[in-house]
Image (cartoon, rainbow, N blue to C red; front, top):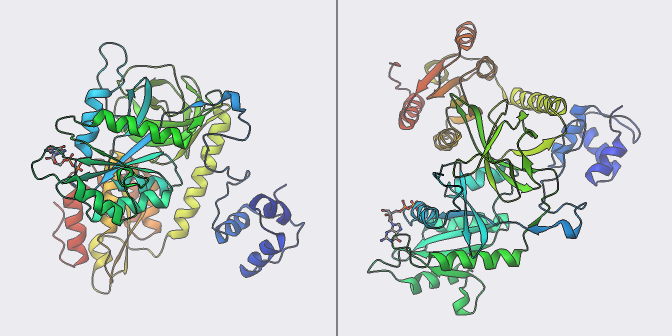
Length: 476
Ligand code: GDP
């Protein structure tokens, strides 16, 4: 027996009459005690701008502290930092410098691995850095409802000042309600002018503490290392004000921050724990992927057996490659995890089908004379970073005449289901550093779906752009 109108109203915190109203708007007549189908529940939730999980109403984003956590179980959680700022202001250099000088080293022989995040130690306390700088990753994660970042470090070059992307970063941090610590970088260069930067920050509502405001600003040089300790100490001060705590005894949950398909090891995902402790052997569920944690590594590539809140870990053993920003949690057993992953898969398929349109074949045909106003693409790539980069770049190609629509994107080979989706949506498939499986090739032939493969991003962009202008060169 499913949920009734009253159940749904209670679960969503709206009066049942509102639910009935919405259903009427959708052409459905229901009374308070009548049962709703999964589809009806989803539609109503969508109308209300809410998300529900079929069967069980979706839990809210995992808070570090859940109602059932008793205060004595809560311990300090390392703050999670994202570095943002204008291009060339030194985000990457700063992350590298901090990693080199302060990274928590594991046992002897550990070599820092790029797993998407790393941890440093300052005054005996830990800080976690997400090592993809910039606000694209931050925004992507947020778009999926992931709240990963506790503090934003805004890098502003002392010789350049506040620039357009600095302003964007400020907007993103504010929209997310995340506190900002400003690193005024490149103070070693002769024409550095930190005072001017502080003035520009004050103009944007980030008045420095030194000037009686509330914004922590720290002069640093990623090049010489000057001010780095000071920056880390200040991050800890801000973290303390935020009272970041979590219960390490709870079942683990958090977010996927990176994932890829490793030819030898299968799906590899970096998880960042918000709450609880993850153990080797736990069953993890992340969207449509699930599996028992076969092995777990820290940022030094060292095998570990467990990890607590605020810690990034790389895990092996998932059935697929979950997108960055996907929430994960520990499931009771593999069977529950599998069935919930299947439910998620079904939901995804329904959503994708709902987005699909009329049927066409090749890129040229699609965009030929009198061609489509929409270009639907299925994008597959070898790593999550490339998927994101492609999606971003492709979205920017949209013009008044043709809208570029990425109907599905993901990591891994081009599969049958990618072809079917492209076919259903009248689009084509783009493979970046990945190839179609043998059966996918057959399905593509049968369905008349074009698969275009590439190994450089600008080529993808160039060709799609050219096709959109109606002058595509034949594929080589
Ligand atoms: P991002 O685009 O923000 O990631 O910036 P990068 O870290 O790539 O830095 C851009 C350029 O500025 C590079 O040539 C760096 O070597 C240089 N740079 C970064 N930090 C400093 C610094 O503190 N001092 C000086 N002199 N150069 C820096």
